[in-house]
Image (cartoon, rainbow, N blue to C red; front, side, top):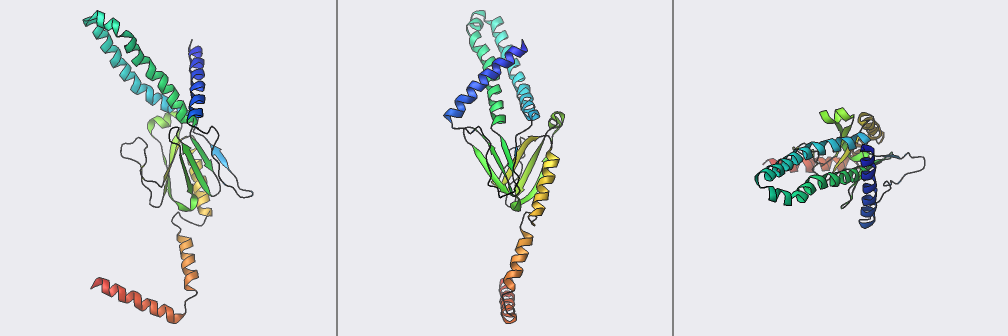
Length: 248
């Protein structure tokens, strides 16, 4: 019986997915990144454990709501039988329809999430109504961290938080929402530590810690190489005078 139900849900989902993809022009293929000759491109999706993780979270919340609605409907049947019978279709609709909507919504979220890695950057895409596509170059990355909650540990998945200079952080509500325009969020991967280490290796390969210190120093040395000793002395005097005026 459960196999038939699963097949029916999959059939409904495929039809819904096709309609939404056509209506909202949702790309079904992965995003692309420009690549130089010999550059490797890796295309990833969240692991299937991420879908199970989302589904379990939803069912926990939905079970509570369904129990409350069912309890209210039974109480109404006992207290006012004729009214309970009249609203029975509405009660069952409120209990069943969210299940179908959740199945579609969770699978859509899973199927529209993509991660693309190149030797120079990472691109993240998600969304249906509003498609969000973020590209982060390794030179600008300030921090890469792995986050895993108890439920994620059960499903064998983790999240990767990518922060760049001037980026925000994780919201305090713990839902995984991120603030700031310079943050990338890679959800539901089973080899988060491996991905993080590969990203850190590519960051080191750009000879930058994410803030561009090495390049800044090289640029500074290159610029000062064109100044004569007399000009440097004049600039030093101007700097000292400006500091004196600022402190007075």
